[in-house]
Image 1: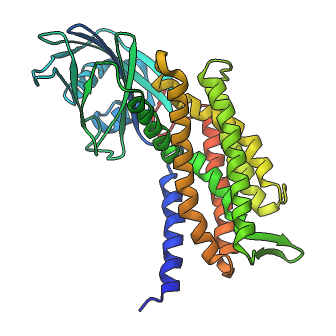
Image 2: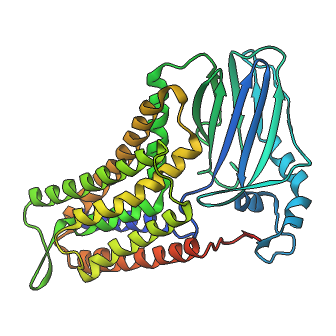
Image 3: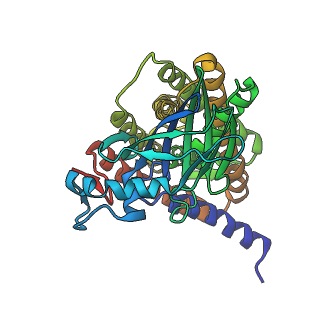
Length: 388
């Protein structure tokens, strides 16, 4: 029979393994997303739906010759199939439940790029029988192949912008078109921020690289367990606060349009920051000042968060409130990671395997994975499917 110690040890190893395995896809800055933007005017709906080519290739097959490269000819040949797949998985209806038939442009092929790769752009139109006061949306894209897939909605009506998040756990929502209460809009952006930190595997691994040595102190004989909880918590708080303050600054600056660095540079630099933070645990380059590392690289991560917020957009009349909500969501998601990991690390800090396996082994694994990300992002390599 397993002892409580053995059970807890397996639990911690399982947490590390799950976080590592979840990050194994080389281009997995985040799981599958799509971006649905709708504009309502009376009884008419115009929209744009950005769907990732990698997801469409998994769902309906786009790479005709199987060489891992998508050409314009292959994409154009499957445009009708893409439209048919999408329209079968999106339903719009008015407040009474009467459907608003959707049509997609079948002669216009467009490609857009988000931070995680190439997306096809579908132009949509729909007409309801009467002016809309409530819009019912049912969303089912990729639910059968990726239960973690999320659809990010941006809905414009009468100068007001609303956002919503669709997924397997919430495939259908009714959105009132009256001006939303500020707290509802704030809450929606909090949810978006929390979701993004949980799907941003590079952000999570950067944070874990900073937390792994928080329960240890480096002395003449190497890493030793910290005897008291208070110094460990003080180190965690200092590191997390530095990271939070830094990425909040650049997130706000980028979201408000003061600065807009190229996303490819930002994503490459974020991958490099993960490598640096992980290798610092092995070679102790920045000894005892991980908060400074967190602060410096946190500026880069803020630009990464701003990229997702740019896809959502900020409502014109409540930009500051929405930005504050998104930032709060990021912090709550981050604190949840800290609350899960630190107690386990503290409990096992005195075990020899923690330094060898979790700190050194885990850090090397994180650095290798981030090196793959860096190679992909710096040289614009997209696997398994790339667009020529």
